[in-house]
Image (cartoon, rainbow, N blue to C red; front, side, top):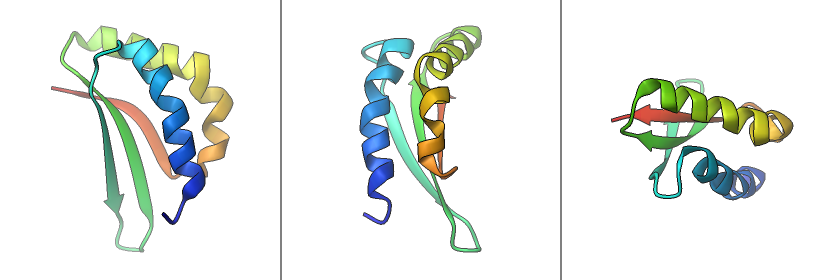
Length: 84
């Protein structure tokens, strides 16, 4: 609610994450709150495969979409993977 641009960015990023990590990969949204009142959102692809495959998928996501769009996040969002 406080950062409407970020919600749009997350909705835009989801298909690219699925394209890079796979169409059935679960996506998880987490928000962490710091002592100074700042917040960071994390959008994570929940990965249960080999680590190198996750690294390669994230690198592909970065190249294909994130590097061109990260400036829109105001440094308050992290897109990554979570190993399970």
